[in-house]
Image (tube, one colour):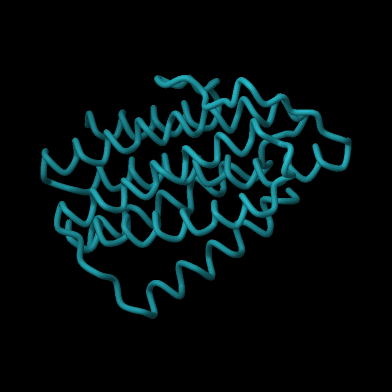
Length: 205
């Protein structure tokens, strides 16, 4: 029963509570950020997508921790989830600073990601870790594309995205070292397609 309560608590905190970070938000103190209205709108749309990604990360790691029978692997997922919670708080804060809102579909994104994480977990620990590796690799590439799209003078958003990139890359390495199984090409393609739908919709809604 405890794990059901933990999973429900994680969902409620992610979707409805103000997120708090354990680490300070990355900044470039010597670089001021002055944006036009159009630049704010572009940055806001991109950071909304990144915020959705962190909502999904909370769902995925919570579901995978829920599904595994290994206490060591559960701890692994929960440590990663804690770092992703920093990302959630940073992107939420940046959205507010830009005068942008989170996605209206966050409950749907969370539910879908939780289902995928649960499925991966039910397929076995090595598959679940492989899912982490592929997810984090795709997220890292996605964040890199945002670095090229964010306004060059939006130093605040760029500092956050750069730190997120570093963390996601490390999560992939950690999962690989923990025994991840490489996913088949069709599964990777399906994940990319689902991510494309999510990012396209979340940028606007």
